Each structure stands twice: as structure tokens, then as C-alpha cells.
Image (cartoon, rainbow, N blue to C red; front, top):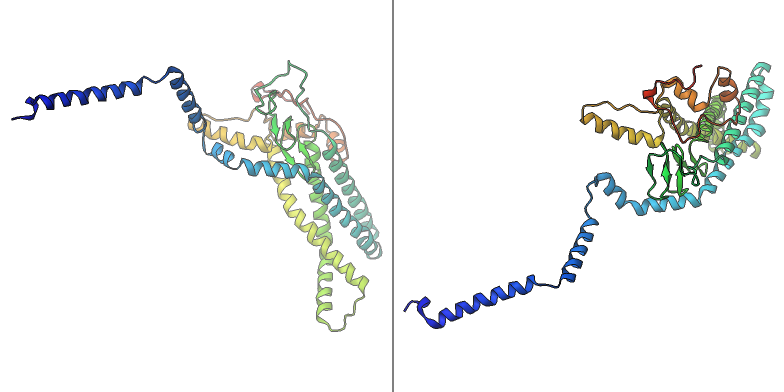
Length: 356
């Protein structure tokens, strides 16, 4: 007998089909409130891992966010330590220059060379001290909170306030900075619209001062180094303790100033190139990305804040006439920068900001 004609087998088959259909209906007929919450939780879980704007930079920032937060926290609390180190190291060089080098200059150099060293050295020192003080004490500039009619291009996600052009949020200062370049721990301050000139001038004159000490003290360094070598080799040292300390001081000064001249000189050169292109350190990265993006579309990107090399320097130093190259660049000057940091001229206007 074939099995499908067996009444018992046919009943058993029908019963299995009914049980399967009933189980499927029961799985599909879950409470509506449960299915809604299940779908909401599923969507929320997916939102944690999916973003149409996600790229390698976003993933990198997310993974290293704890490290960035730690660096910001330490930089915020150790800012005064860095400022103290700058003052301490600079003061140590000044003590050596006045106590050790100045008597040598007065006793061995000719009057014209003495006048040169006294004039240039003190001018360089005044420029360093003035610009460092102004860079640390001058506010970089903040967007006004009370005004609602300020021009803005976006909204800060952390401050939840309007952001004018060239404004960025500083995680260390925990607020938005006008024309932010970077946060400098050696100043314990942000570098922005109102103190960018002071920062660059300090770097420039500090580099020139270190080069001056390194070049003028080269022969003294060689003599001091050879003297110490002889002192260590000779069983009976012919040098007194005072002479030994003078030689060590000269070596310390030359090594420190030469190292700072190389490191700070590279930083100063980098910022000089950015100023020539009308960029800040942050805008350098954003402009590079924009150039790459527009190049894929066959277009050319132009920096809207680039007025040309000469005019970029005029805008940066606030030079409005020829005499300002001396009174505002080569001499200490506390003048404010051009503009308020909220609005900026752009290149399509073809406008010369300062027809000097």
C-alpha cells in the first residue's frame, strides 16, 4: 500500500502543516509596542556604527579621542610650567651674556664692534621680551555671544554658538577663537586674530637672538670645549673652579641657543610660508583637502583669504604706509590688527586692502 493513501499518514501530514503555519503566525503576531521598540533599538544600534560622512579621519579621531582629551587636559594645567621654562631658560642665557660674555667683549673688541653688540643685543632682547609678553597677555579674540546679528558660516557643535569665518573651537581653552592658528603651550594661550602677530614676531626675534648668540659665541665655545678636554686629561688641572664654571657656562649657552635656533627657526619658516599664502595652521589642512576634492571634479581651488604675498604680509603686520615697516615691524608696537576678525574680504572682490 502506498503511504499517501493511508488515512493515518494523511492525517499526520495535515496536522504537521497546520502546526507549522500556526507557529509562523504566532511569531509574526508579536505585540505592536514590542515591534516598535525593537525597531527603534535596532535603528539606534545601527546609528552608532553608521554615518554617511564617516571616513578614515573620523575613525582615527574617535579611536584617539581619549588620548587627545588627556593631552588637552595636561596642556591646560601645565601651561604655566611651560611659560616658566621659557622665562627661566631665557634668563639663564642673559645672566651668562652679562656676567661672562660682556666683560670679554669690553676687554677684547674694538669700539665699533662693542657698539654693534650692545645696540643689536639690547634691541633684540627688547623685541623678544615685548612680543612674548604681548603674546601671552593679549586675548586671541572670541566671537561675541550677546550679538545675534554677527556674520557666521556655521555653528560650533561644542559651544552651540555661531562661528564666523576662520573661527575654530579650541579644546584646551574650551571656547571658539577668531582666526585660530593653534594653541601654544609655551604661551599658555591660543594664537588667534589679535595676538598672531605677537606670536610670530616673538618666534622671529627669538630665532635671530639665538643665531646671534650661536654665531658670535662659536669661537668661545671651541676654546671652552678644548679647555675642558685638557682639564679632564691633565692629571693636575691648571684651571681654577671659576674658570671651569665659565667654560661650562659658555658651552651650555652655545648648545642651548644653537638647538633652539634650529628648532624654532624651522617653526618660524613654516609660519612665514603660511602667512605668505594667507593661511593659518588649521586652514592649511582644510585647504589641502578642498584642493584635492575640487581637483577630482576638474576644478581649481583658490584660497579666499589670499591677497598675494606682499599684501598678505601687510595685512598680517598691519602695515598701512611705508613708515610702518619700521615703526610697526622693527620696533615694538601694540597696534591692533586690521579688521575685527568677524568679516573678511575675499578674492573675487579684487580689492586691495591697503594700496601702499
